[in-house]
Image 1 (cartoon, rainbow over the protein chains, first blue to last red):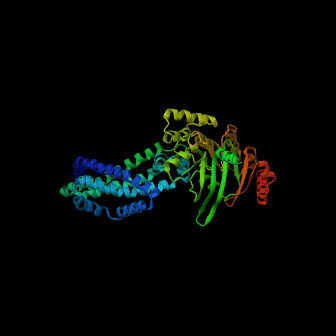
Image 2: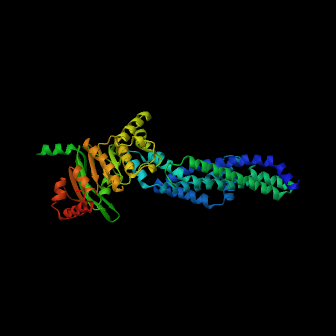
Image 3: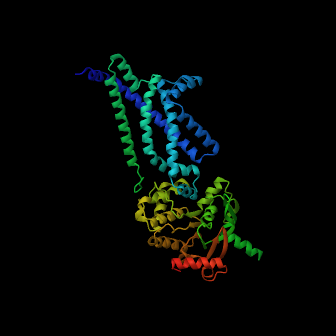
Length: 222
Length: 259
């Protein structure tokens, strides 16, 4: 057996354990991004001017500063300044989540704005408060429309999670680098790492496609 | 005489006074007043862009008027108070030109949702009531179909059922058949006729002059944000005082050819 393949097979259990960590970071970040992104989008569309401006500032900041800078800024700077002692895993997940929230807010905002104005009007005409109308009429439709964009965001967060290696999170990239620097089998190992990322992308995107079909509104084409 | 005036004012279910609305520089409604008595049907006709739709939307504050007052059963509505506004809107059924059914809910859920979420009705009860309203508009078999699976006429009937489920004291209909294929108009007209026969109080904007003349107690001709003339259908349609009303009625009767 070629030397490279042996190195990959030997390293595989160790690297695959990293994929569990990677999935943890991605699920956590996407979850945080979702739970922040939805209210941010609602605020952007329906909020008063001061709120819209505040959210726009948030989005501008997290979309404008490089990922690595943000990771270091929060992990080595802001979190310690605030006296919070996060693990590298938690810090990486939170920072990725805060960034994803900025991007996700734009996905949801676009989806909300794409709904016909009459949906909100009809809800109001029935005596619903705006909060109820958003909760029961607007968001159920907007979230369905957001799944393709969300799937795209998933693949980006998955790839971005590799950068948390710089904080020392023991995910796929960190473990691959660790093994490669000892065995000097860089090429086969990084090919293996790349394949794992591709597979995770494929599984996630496929899963979201299934979800999209599952929640599709009958007779509705989009 | 004074006593009579007071009584007749109390009779009105809906009263609108001096409504004004501008969008930018353009004044859409120039101080309109009207009232609708219990069981009365008033139909607003007039050219598109004349403010009919804006007026109806101002009445339930989907568009906030710049000036003017709205009274429901003698109570002045303070639209600035959210609770009061929401309670008022529950009592005013609104039918839109393009239906505005909730696209993610099937027909039954469309009728049911406000009963559960606004009226806090028990789910099973709300379901029963929603089914009854769908039956009333002849759509019992379509309860589990989604808006995208229904024809325009069916959608509008669902939207009427949705409004009826709230037990409105008055209904506002904004050109309810304008977005429909000619062959689907009949089924919606039949439902509206049935409501009128059951004594529903209504204010309706429409271009269907023949339909209006049969149903209306009074026709209001509106143009450029003002009421030009109002009166019983025979008077407005056949013997209008104002030349502009005459001209409009002649045209629209000629086009629809169904007076």
